[in-house]
Image (cartoon, rainbow, N blue to C red; front, side, top):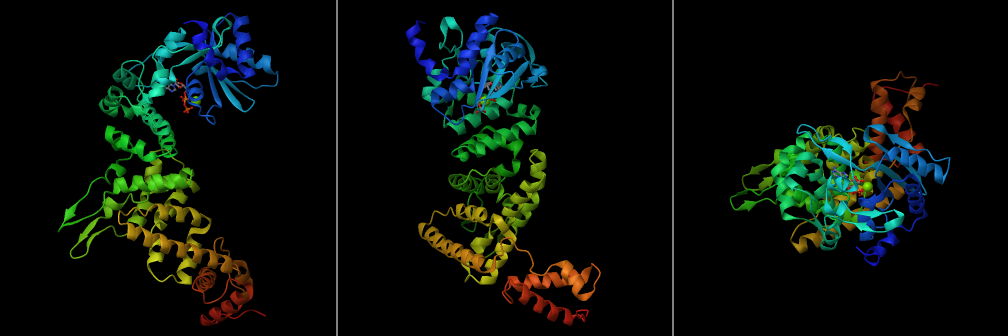
Length: 479
Ligand code: ATP
Ligand code: MG
């Protein structure tokens, strides 16, 4: 390759950081290259994802990293991962990682390779996709040269995900790559090359040797991609989804009885997911969308005369969330409870919009959803996927009313972060009670009265109401 044919790559390594790496490589007598995601994303012009820089060197990545860090500033702290032979540090808002060029070989039962030192070429051979195997030289004699043995640049232009080596072997060696293929395809809007795709189907059972932490990382990236449905359709088609989230594939299909069918809940869910993604990048809201109808298959019933019902699927669904989160190694904390809450409430705004909207129903919804009411409304609106345009228009119109009502009531009654105006301690003091059932009963009566609109959400009114309620069970204020 003559110089002029690779010079244009220089613009991707114009950062002074690369000059330092280049100088150190020259002084140390090793070869250094920037490789992988950084090269791919630079050429694609994906600006925000250019923060991670991977540098491969012939020789020890750790020794090299220390030298580069020292040359930049003695203050830099280098993190060393001895087991992986890598080292990294953060500088100017970027994370730069160094690894020695290596050759890998795999054993069948593990995705952890046997590693030995190798050449740049060996290192490129172990990369997962052609578009991830491109390297740009940081060496003085050919600075800026693109080293692209697998024509990654062509695949990048043609938007193709393809493995550099035999895909059957590549996926069998490290089955996480199957998830990565689908994730990149979804994230970048690329298609997976036919042979590569068929090899995923062939190797789908191998996913069992990958930890759920790693699988979920990829699922999260699919959820956050532009149209997550793409990724999930591929996961389903290749058979991977059956191994990861069989509850989702269970939702596939339509059943017809007496000429009455129900919609395919799998595709419906994917449409809801895409709709939510247009409005939000909250990963837990996206999980809520993915799981909102998860209990439809287990609650499905055909009722003579009225058709298909999925009665209670929102409650059953919210109960299914913890076991799914546990299996997928997702957090079992307030994030999970948020997803449960959204799944369990996802029908409420629709129910509201169908009836004459009463203040008290709105107050109850506000109380239960709390600060997540806006997210819930995003989910509910996304859930309107009917093909009947008139129906959709009607729903959206009703929804506007619900939103308006929500705002009015919230302004008036401040229910979102509901704190009872008279709390348990005050009840105890007022009637000289011990903590117990009576206190709970009185507290609850106040809450209910406010939600039902019997009294306003104010101290005086709540106190008067409390005294009245207490009298009913024979209690009088002491003093
Ligand atoms: P992103 O950072 O957007 O997830 P990336 O391509 O940078 O994308 P990383 O996981 O950061 O992905 O990996 C950096 C590079 O390491 C990849 O570009 C690829 O060359 C290589 N790589 C990562 N994981 C694998 C794998 N499982 N098998 C083979 N090569 C891999
Ligand atoms: Mg990366």
